[in-house]
Length: 311
Image (cartoon, rainbow, N blue to C red):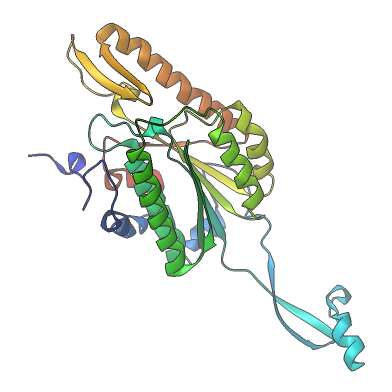
């Protein structure tokens, strides 16, 4: 019998996605920091910066009073009525949270419990539920070789429903086309460019990826984003790609890695593992250039067994 750390998450088969398993991620979201702790130390461990660029929302117009800022005078109302009026504003309390979700073909890989792509979806849904529970707006850019799905930040039920629906549809589309996918080395660069256009100042951005397709080309748009947004990153890994899976001394292991069909032996596995770890290190080094320290999530364990990483 499998223990809890090796059991499939509720409603999940580890390969496809369904609405029930993403709704179940709501319980995991309660382990995330609440709004007050985020406001005090936003992204502690990622970037040492205050929440930036909170906007102001128009509330009403009233008569001008001594001490009011002259810059807030509503000149149109003043001209129409002949009496000075000033605009009142309230601080926006809903912070836009954007997820850059990498569903590239390399993430449709799993050696122990879940496909990395399924773990990506579980993590994204958990972050989405956390945003909604804290009164923030959640949006996403789901990127793959064949499709870029842009979900504008929305609050409450609309926000989480569009995220879960988008994840399920995009994930299934990739599964259906996994044998026809053409390599596109620039698809994550295009996603970063689109993210740069849609992210508003003060947004919180989470990058969720395996690190293989976010390369040096992506540095320019990510650097620009880091000037007016807070950025954090998660790398979703697999035990076979991390070298943590127990293997016999001699083996012949069939593996599908993106478009490649491989049979790994002990000797070829060591070389393949070196390449995998080098790609992850290159991503970590890239993130460090924008003062982001990625956190690692293992697809060989359910997310419920890794909640400390999300705190």
